[in-house]
Image 1 (cartoon, rainbow, N blue to C red):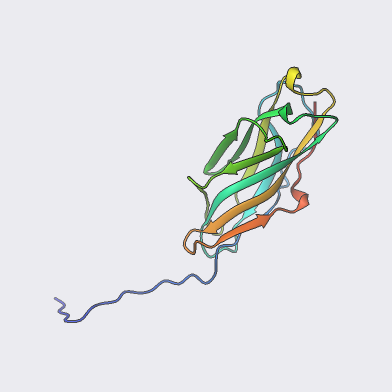
Image 2: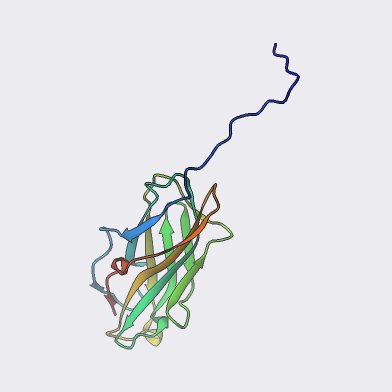
Length: 171
């Protein structure tokens, strides 16, 4: 039996630094291709997120992807824009008028474990002829990812480099 008249204090945990996240285009990204209008689930780009040097898990609260539209392609060329990764599956029905896809994950953040390197895929359905243009092209790029450390709570934006632009898919 142990008797103690005073208070007992346990260990205090400290985080050596806030969470760190990097991103780059993954080598498994699809090549440029011709796609038929009406095709579903077309993969545009794969992004490797790296928390390999992070001292804590990362909570991703927002992902913003932009598009490059060529050949008079309207923003309606794609629909059901989807981001998928281990622990993440979100879909937007349409791009904004500016060709941007903003995924708000603040209500249910995507957790990237410290030391891991998950791959995120951006895919979409190619719309039918009434909403797309023959000979048009579209590609997706990552613009920003907003995250915070799971313990530190330090919010950070990473501005993804231009090398993360996916290949052009031409209708």
